[in-house]
Amino acid sequence: MKNNKIFIYIVASSIFFTTSCNKFLEHQPDDRTELTSPVKVAELLANAYPHANYIAFAEAMSDNAGDKGTTERFLPNTSPWNYIDQIDAASEDTPPFYWNSCYKAIAAANYALEAIEKAGNTPEYSASKGEALVARAYAHFMLVTFFSKTYDKATATSSPGIPYVTLPQRTVEGDYNRGTVASVYENIEKDLIAGIPLIQNNKYRVPKYHFTTQAAHAFATRFYLFKQDYEKVVEHANAVFPGATVLENLRPWNTTYAGLGYYELQALYTNSIEPANLLLQEASSYWGRNYGGYNYGLSSGVRATVFNAANNPTKKALAMNTKVFGGNETVYNIPKFREHFVKETISATVGDGYNMVPLLTSEEVLFNRAEANARLGHHVEAITDLDRYLSKRIMGYSASDKFSEEKAVSFFSTLSVGDALVATVLNFKRMEYMHEGLRWLDILRNNIVVEHVHANGIDKIVLGVDDPRRLIQIPQDAVAAGLEANPR
Image (tube, rainbow, N blue to C red; front, side, top):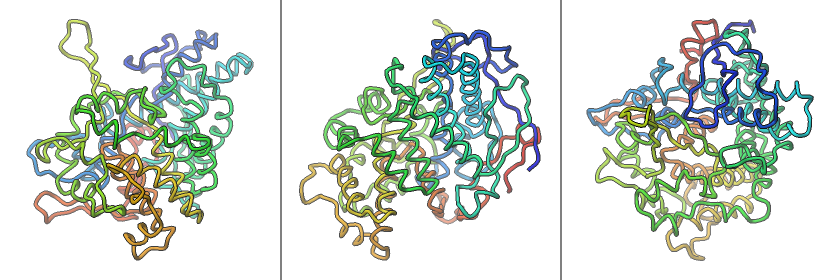
């Protein structure tokens, strides 16, 4: 595949950002002479995570977003619901903005790795090297997930991937090629395997904002689930939660959460003190301010489909449904996000909005392990994890609520036991991650057809499994610079 030039943002060399509210400077760096100590390298790695939010476009593309029929139709949400390519790289909550933020994060990781190499790879840099490698793997994984075909052993070696950048760039333009999905996955796995053993949790002041060993293993469960290496999914999930500690780290929806008011839940859900949050990242985003009022979102139809007790294998309403606030569908929302508004100056009335985004959570690890075990034929283990989950979701959970193989196959009557358990996992995940965008990842991974029905009840958009619009378009600037566009 030929080399092309793609515009990549480069982190400025002389400033280390101790808060993610600062912006990267978009110009050519110098020779990085300031990265002369383990402390400075560690400071740089605060920027090795994408400071952008994928939720707005991922949620809208999924079947978790319905057309409410309102007059106000915010553009960041409207275009992805209609599968229209977004081209404005300056607007938060869009794919081009996310693409650029991921490559900024990758640039920070690569400069840190270069500095570590120059310092001789000494032990005091080991933890930062581990964080940089895993963070680089994560950003590339999210890019290949959104902008390339979903991994399939039969097509991965021929499907275009995304540029996997492993070297610092001292020119604003560099020679890159998309490689293949297979080559991207190989590089991700290489970085994961090398990085995870090096991470040291005690090096972080606020661990939840960094790749701890738990967060790194959690990411590995997602990666290997996409790669269909289910033994590895179970292995890494067990490393996140040795023994039975998973139960202690699930969100207590049917107890503590049930007693919280709107703003109390909003303040806790993405807080670092919440054990379920394994990795959090502050993102430049207006999602928390707008998602309840978006025209394309939690409509009455979506709420009835997703949260109705009759539509899940337990035949009981799960506790999340009791926390859908709003008098009607135009503002239905579960209060998961609280905006942090940063003024330009102390006396200013304008500024920027930020959200804490839960990138990895305990529930996802449990779901990934349950699905992997179901696919491996380990049905007892999958049912045990599903029951653990329900013990934190069914109000007044009792022995009669214990999940079973019979409940799964009774609800999914046309499926085998293993497939019924996988379908159960996907059913619960759709509820669990309302407003969080992860449903789109399951749609991609499981070749689920999506139908978006317009408010008139007649017109609809059908996104089939081979529809090229399932691949988000490569940003306009990158295509203009020569990078191969996705088909349309």
